[in-house]
Image (tube, rainbow over all chains, first blue to last red; front, side):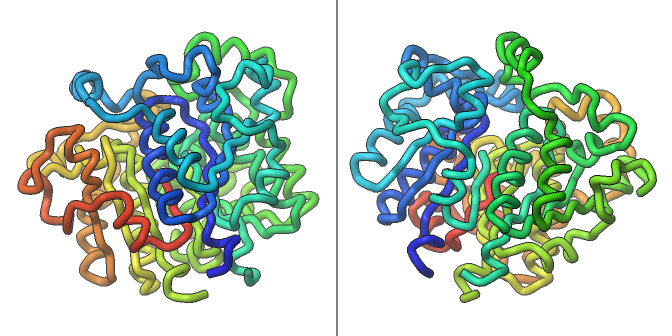
Length: 136
Length: 136
Length: 136
């Protein structure tokens, strides 16, 4: 397996806390294995990375239901943004904002949390990503 | 990376305009990089490719909320079906309808938009796809 | 393509019957092609694998709408759990429960359907998985 194919390339489109946590767990794991991680933030995921609301409640997928909501609230786990911060400390993790989504959601670069490294078009992301894309 | 591993293999299951746009952006990017793209349409994605409703409003993920809905309506971007049409013009992009989903949703081949090339079983799709599957 | 890259590595996070069916179809297809399949169950997908509710109604994605709900009810197809059982019989399919999700949802190993082989951390999953992760 060459370096390109070893990397974890994630397109994050969902912005709910459950989907982002599911993705963050994979990122931490991959970073710990010294795999390079490339992340592109689209749409609602990008919206959840705004500096002024990144740790706010982003809700859960509708399927969580009342039971899931209750369990989630009582969970003492780390926040997904904290997991990603740690992954960036221990590994080679790049987080890019999708330029098309920035336009659509009227987000300026300075609105984003410092976890986000830069703004990328999808072509630049695909060039940096491995062949395999994981979409969340 | 051999030819097989270079291709982008997408299973589209969600039929909302945000998820389909997120996928279409990747398809356009991959086609522009001369990567072969194989797409299998399942369930609600397949339903959105009916000829008589492909450009109609397919809604957004529930997480979009009222704010997301409003921003989306005002966006001047291309429709995902138009992006896919352009991707097919510039690159090697095959779009297959999943035969199981055709049965389930009672869709006949003539009901589908010409963007869809043919009806495939999942085995045929997996044989044509690369090892990496992106599920949207 | 070496053995590692040939395997289908799925993270199942959604627990609705449509998403699980979409995934199960891929698993059956991959198993029939003699590809190794590694599955990690997170969150709502894990919840749907509880022994006492695996064949119960897990709902559909909200986008299914009333029309989708009606079509789904009338479908004579196999249940996704039955598809996975057959895939395990014909192929090399491992299904792991994510340990973090077990804690979060307060699920004990004995609560799970026998389809689930064991409880894994995400690191163990990533080590067993191929480079390409499919997230459903």
